[in-house]
Image (tube, rainbow, N blue to C red; front, side, top):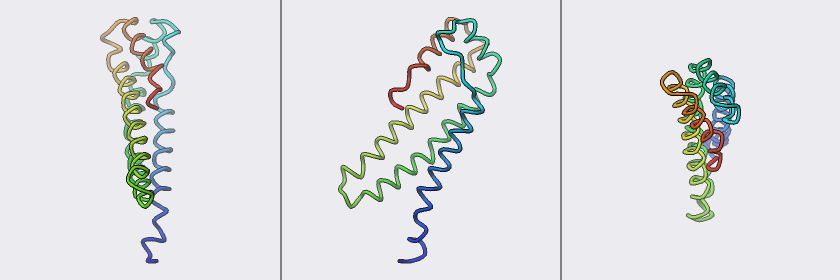
Length: 137
């Protein structure tokens, strides 16, 4: 065993720590939007009051997916001896979660960006989709 192999465990640790830290930071920065159930005026008010933090938090959330994808690549490598199908499944699953997170953050960013330009009911519609886009996650 050479020196590189003995430190290989740092790859999954670093990627998962990076993912978790960035995800937590994105949640803290973005905050929690009002639910679509709260009504169009409250949803619009939240996005108008928190536009910058929602956009920055959404961007950080998308960036958080990068180390997660690298973790999936590492899992694929580790599981390679078990066969092509088994080694590919975690990478596919992580790719689905990453795309779901990108969609989730895109909706948050889009609602914040459009808050000044569209009506409360239109923002409430985007919020209703955001509230229920958890299936790929």
